[in-house]
Image (cartoon, rainbow, N blue to C red):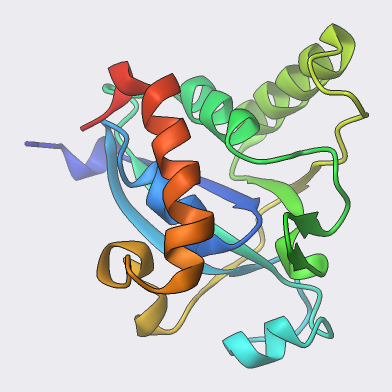
Length: 182
């Protein structure tokens, strides 16, 4: 893909384990780069172990660099909402703790407006059996995760968590969003 880097934008989503989020969003046309990391907490430069302790306030997130000429923020939001459970507080499946919360960190006023609009639209539609608890917060900073988290699913696909948690999620995503795949 020949992309003008001056036109790239950023979206930051937390939807449980960042390995799952990265595996899904990395397959989308228009997504140029994904950087797993930590956002929303109080400790500067946290480590994975510190975030997993539940004492830093950070969420596991993916910093998604995308080309808005190929995929829109609205399309990214659509994938975000439908590839995790936005109705559970501090939990995605067996992953429990505030680091696994559903959260959108907006980078500008337009992203905030679109995220809040989409959340209200979904809540009003009753598509989920419970209210959406996804936080929508201004992005302050994303701290990059350690290198071994980068492309985790692609490099560790036979690991049990990847086989039993991430792979089915990716397969479901690929069926629903097949027209948006790279």
